[in-house]
Length: 242
Image (cartoon, rainbow, N blue to C red; front, side, top):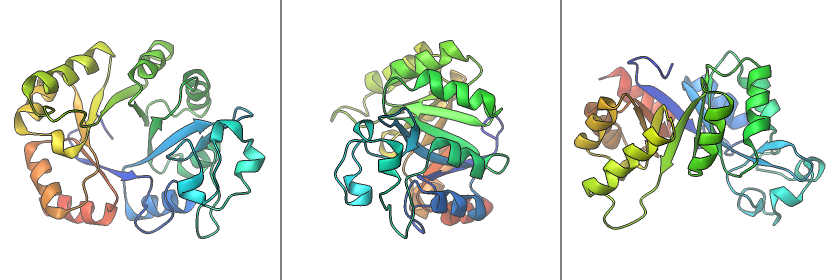
């Protein structure tokens, strides 16, 4: 999927505009809507289970305040993410998604690299998975464990000078240094020069989070490789008409 010239649609936390984010229902909807990948975030529970949630604290999603790393899977499974949906494990997501959609997994915590790669290998999902993180050293660990597993640096806007070329060039050099396959910048970091230079360095660029048709069209024309979006259907409509 991500290796060819086709523009890919990555469902941000699944199809979170029609179902509770980062839940099995949201991922199922993303598959039905025709996304190429589902994007989701992972943490490790107190008893070592890899679970799916955006924040390290369960409060925003479930209304219950608690740190994932200090809760067992049994305790986490008692919480409601909305519409009766429970916090899924990575294994549950794999069972739902395998053979149907690619996985774009964001690492939100350290000490996940070994267990994550081991699970992906056992499920034969190395080829159809892309790992991203703001924790760039974790990406380097993953690359050392399994060099064929694609990794991507996540890049926020960190300073008011973020569109200066010295900053953008540094992002690209950082991705190369960490043996990355792609860069995932926030959309308002991106300009034509940045996209072109990324491609000149044999990297891919998937941007987040793009939800308006105008923005989607703008960045597709620039040549970005993928759109990380909350609105899968809208992205499909845009790509079908371009």
